[in-house]
Length: 206
Image (tube, rainbow, N blue to C red; front, side, top):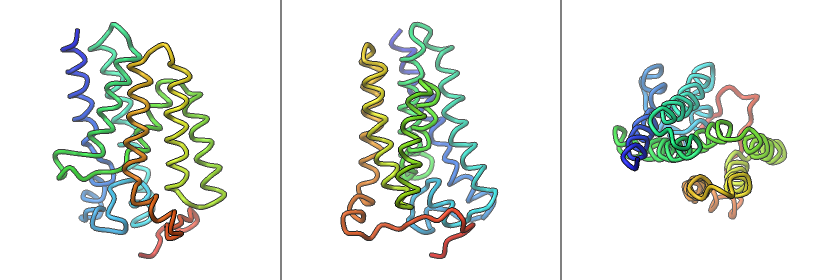
């Protein structure tokens, strides 16, 4: 059955490379979002750089690819649906962050992680997302909210899936990777230089 897991992993990675921010910026703006703002191919930089309804398309793609990959994985690896979805989801995140078709330079994986949390256990999503919202509303710092949510993500998977080491292990890995991808943000947070995001502005000036 290991070959089925390998297929799930490869499929997940390929789905993950469908980076919403890159695709939509190229298709609708004829630009590469990675050449704007922070240079990150993620939702926050897309929102700051372009705003508007095209941002919703980014969300749909990045959430949709996780949902589609996880659903397909349960048809490929039928022994344990939780393991199938979690391993696949971890590789979707890897593909999102390191997309082979886009020079291995993608996003930070927070939206993908949120989608997987909802798929695996809505309570994990609710708690982690709730913490993100609270931190963001208090500070207007998306990065800080994301880091706190990722930390909660790891802890909650370890709690809710304590009897499934492959599942919670993948959850901890995903959270650690997401936090690592925020290492630049962490440095700016420490120095008090991190940029704030205001949702009432459709497009922030660079």
